[in-house]
Length: 185
Image (cartoon, rainbow, N blue to C red; front, side, top):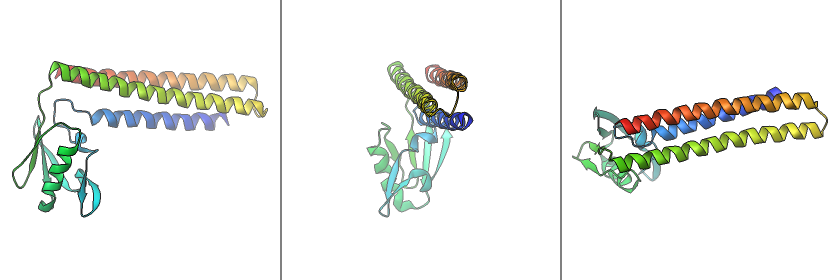
């Protein structure tokens, strides 16, 4: 029983870290990164469709994203979706390709991005701690039912605490790496 609870907690914690990594990848970092377009959907023939399914996305230069739709009629829709998004980048449309020129980051912008990174990281840590709390609650419920002994509960609580500590350290390392990346550009 305890192993099952711990395994499920491990899965949830891994998913939390995966979500954090994806979230951080989609943050602007002063370099062209196709992941910044992941959240943008385009209305295409009445359905909301991710840009990556409508166009090829390439990086011709370090700070330029090129979006080449497979269907030229989607060009205007893609451009509108980018303008509506929270990217803060004006697309340049030449009739065949949309270019996004990623601006240089100012010191103030970098600090704001780092602040967002820290907030996102803290949210992930809170989620990890919530998973730990869920496990501890399950252990206590098992104890009330007299399904497991006090010693087994202690072991389970210690193991989930160790897992929590490991995942929190992992998140801290990921955040530190991303912060250095942002501040060193």
